[in-house]
View: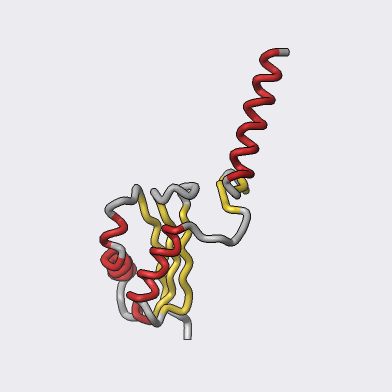
Length: 115
């Protein structure tokens, strides 16, 4: 009985933490319930919008669960036209030079608009 209660209590505490942090687990990945952005996502998106003003699509996601250690960036910009993928990623890395210093990791996905 005691171990059952302890397990149930542990599960309830974990569930409350997930609810309180406004996150949900989908397919084994932690995701936010609402479409709100973290401060880090907003800051990185602002920098990238300034650096790539012609970007037709930009998505910044904190994939570290909200702590700001790792981000995933999807950016589509005509400024990448004629550049190899590694050069496109270098441009993004250069734009985020200061922010990258405090990160554990960064996933970058770049594209040139299809027109």
